[in-house]
Figure 1 (spheres, one colour):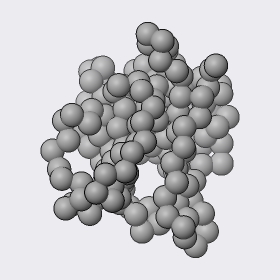
Figure 2 (cartoon, helix red, strand yellow):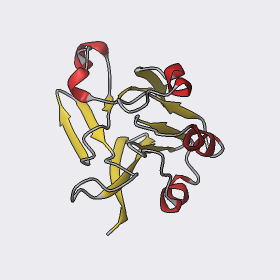
Figure 3 (spheres, helix red, strand yellow):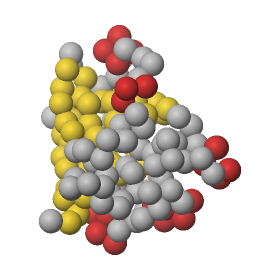
Figure 4 (spheres, one colour):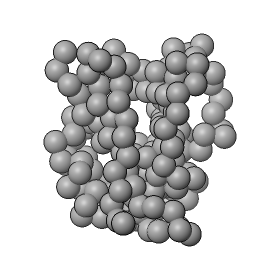
Length: 155
């Protein structure tokens, strides 16, 4: 199996940093996990790779109403479930056959496995909030399985 690279970004709040665009270069797919903030963000990301986006709680403008609240994606034999706010999860990922739940909202990078399901929050790639880091993520899908990691855009 040829490795598949998925760029994961969230909580841009209308700001698409050049460092984020650079890290997303070469992605086979890109997931934006909500709180986009401006349609220009999606236009820019869609030029790099096929884009899947969910609506976040700040995405209230008319253009954002077309964005779904949740998305299912199957890539490389793995099932991904995307939703902005993890607390709003209305499915049971293990019984639904989900391999990875991706979410944003908290602006906090997070990666944990429970009951054979990965939970991944890339953190916020947009404007700084409190003292939280500016981050995004990448997922590698390969014959060895799923590997997710965080990338810090600003130290």
